[in-house]
Length: 145
Image (cartoon, rainbow, N blue to C red; front, side, top):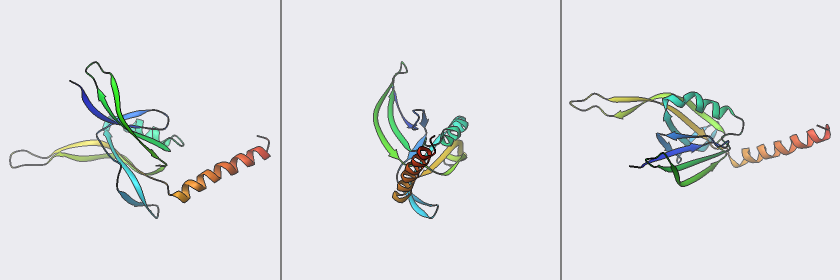
């Protein structure tokens, strides 16, 4: 029987299966109220995710993919949602989440997960980033590099 999964794909093409992904809402980060992407992965991919976000420009374009995995392992992408300029790393870490609440007869069930929260650049910050690239190109050209 096939199953449906969600993945987060970075600009370099590497993608990771998510446990939870919320791409709506906003948080106050670095003096601005910004749209965020709040993602949870399995604890085992913490080092991989940390390496991905340290690659310059790798969070410029993020793609959320909804996929179906067939019994034979074939992955079919059902839909993709592209998000741009999520270059501000609000947090990354391994956090404990409640998977099942305690009842009268069973204790609470917790799970450790890799958590990544990214904030989006404002229009002004995106424009400044673009202008800086152009300035760098002019300076390098004038230096003959």
